Structures are given as structure tokens and as C-alpha cells.
Amino acid sequence: MFVLAHLSDVHLAPLPVPTPPELLSKRGLGYLNWLRKRRRIHRTEMLTKVVADLKAHTPDHIAVTGDLTNLSLAKEFVAARAWIETLGGPDKVTVVPGNHDCYVRSAETFAAEHWAEYMCGDDHGGFPFVRRRGPLAIIGLSTSLPTPPLAATGALHGGQLERLGDVLSALGHEQAFRTVLIHHPPVDGAHHFRRLRDAAAVREVLRQHGAELVLHGHHHTSSLAWLPGPQFRIPVAGVPSASVAPGRHHDDLAGYHLYEIDGAPGAWRCTLVVRGFDKDDGRIVERRRQPLFG
Image (tube, rainbow, N blue to C red; front, side, top):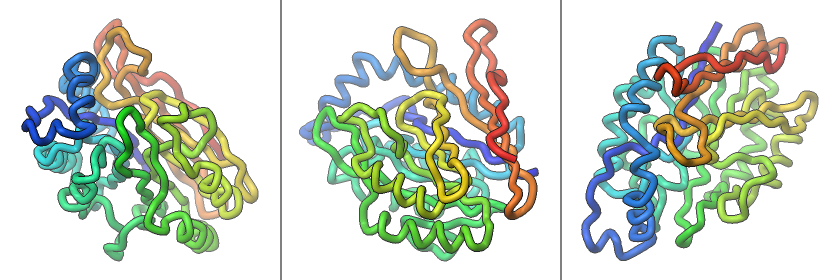
């Protein structure tokens, strides 16, 4: 059995104090929001519990689907790199960026500069990249783009959408267990200012070429949706933020998912295990176990 762990929307704290020039942008509003609310939601002690529980289950690989930073400050990327390294090396960890990791245009290159080894294919190619880990063919996508104030939308960029179909098709012919990592969910229902702008086009590519699993973050909730594929439905799963503490907000409390994958090409089996914080006893517990197929 191959065990894949998935966590997202880490929003590492504490936030470095921005310089005055850094606040002359969308970051100014983001910083006010951090001081007013988000610093009480995203807590280091919650993330520490999640990571300790995750490591206790000794997954074979860990997927992180973005929003490691808050305002895309340069110092945040250094801290995030150090945190990623605590999870494991590039052979054990794959990262794709989120909207907070490209908060402003001046930060567009920061993720690639600091996390490159964790965000590239086995051939060192860029998005959409492919990494082979056990039975998995991990396909990494980036929807991380700078947006105006109050917006958190995303889109595949740099020709990713055009190449994605060929990648999925080739891996499908090999009967690999295709696992797509993307920050924004390619499903309907997202708020207009938080949506994946080309979600319909991404869904069409998946409908034509298929995938075994799509993993995303962004919404800070544990979710499971299904999209049509060429032969079978495709599970699309989201996780809570890995650092959310109890309080007066609508986010799910901190947690992560495990995927237990076994079987053989053409006859894969996959079970979703949802683990999350229990505020009554302060531990991370198993909340649900659900076979997805096989």
C-alpha cells in the first residue's frame, strides 16, 4: 500500500512585520486583515499538532497545495522553505503554490526561487510537471497569479491548460495512478472573487482525459466532489487549512487527509482518511474513512 498525505493552506505564523514600502500595495489591506482576524485563526501550535500526527502515520509522500505564506513577503518564503524541509526532501514532498504565494506582482518569482526543488518534475520541467512516486504520477499545476485587492481568484497560466490534456492522456495509456495537485478547486460553487477562472475548461480536460484523483486547497474545508471522466467519475478532494484554531469563524478546524492506494494498473483501490482537530480533547483524530473506488 502507498500512503499519500495531503495538507494545504498552512499560512505560516508568525507573520514578519512588513516594511512601509511593502504595505503600499494589496499587502496593506492583507496586513490589516491579519492583525484584525487572521492571526487568531492561523496558529503555529495547531500546525505543529497536525504535522506531528501526519508524521506518526509515516506517509510515503506528502502533497502541499499552496498558501504557505500570507502576504508573499520575501521573509515568508525563507520561513516556508525551512518548514517544508521539516516535512522531508523533494523525493518525499511535492508543493504547488496558492494565491497567497503570489499576493502581488513583485512576488511572482519568489515561490520558484525558494521552493524550486519541490515544485518541478523529475525532468526538472515546470508546470504542469510530473513526478513519479511509487504507483503515483503526480501532476503539479499552478493557479497562482497576482490579483486585485479583495480578490483571490486563480487560473492556469503559461500554456498549462493546453499541455495538461496531453500529459493526462499519456499517463492514462500507462495506467498510472494520476494525482493532480492544484490550489483552486476546479468545481462549481466558488464565490466569484475566489473562483478558478478557467474551471470549466479544466473540467473539460479532465472529462476527456481522466485522472484518478484531484487534490486542492483554498476553501479551508474538508470536501469531496465528483467530476465526470471518460470512463469513471473523478474524486476531487479539498482539505482544511492545516493551522486553523477554534474560534468564531466558518473554517473547518485544522486537519489533513490520507489516501491509502493499492491494487494494480487498471484496478486501483483508494481509501480517503480524514483526520482533524477535536476541540474536546485537543487531539487530531480520524473523522471519516471512505473508499473512493476499487
